[in-house]
Length: 243
Image 1 (cartoon, rainbow, N blue to C red):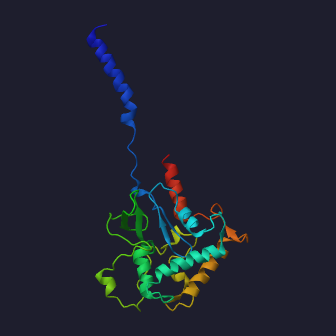
Image 2: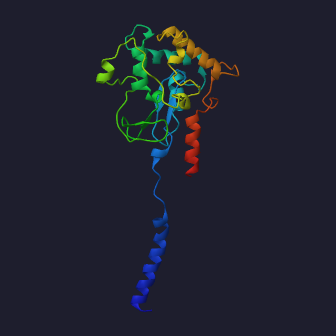
Image 3: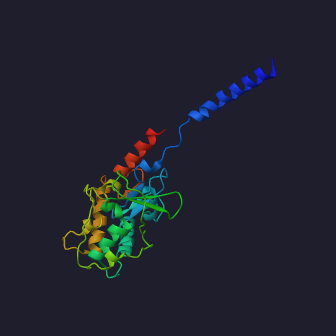
């Protein structure tokens, strides 16, 4: 066999071997996945990078101080109390409209229809003015509990007694990320509808939420026994479709 023919055969074999690699599609862009967000029964947001475990796990571990896998009413109420203290920026035992506005704009903007994703790099956030689709591009930052962000000029000039406009145009707000249909989980505690939320009201909401989740009367909740949020289901379906 001539050297020229041998070279052509080797070149052809190499091309065939390389063909599957060339035909393999590029990894999909994760930006079209639903945001990996969970909002706790009393409104605390938990976010994780795309394809990371759904962050209901992070909330459950935080609330279940005993670490025994059985979240009691006492533990859930204590977790709510700790979050109330984060929201109560004046430390007077009452959430006023300004506190609620800060929650909706800076801590859990999902209730206003803002999409918030976190990348694999800790502390880097992507924010879109959208519910789940129609993304307008990254921009802006938000604050997490314990990491407050300075208010902008519009926020600083607002009357602390005025009630800001809330919810996104879909009206769903936080509901897709939560076990409950409440679009705004913090103001759900305002049972007398006066625009102010006392700590006792907030903890009473936590007790009601526990009773709703503990529908079999065990006296505790397990991670496996919790319902799945709408977003959790959509994430699982989207990732399964890509396998």
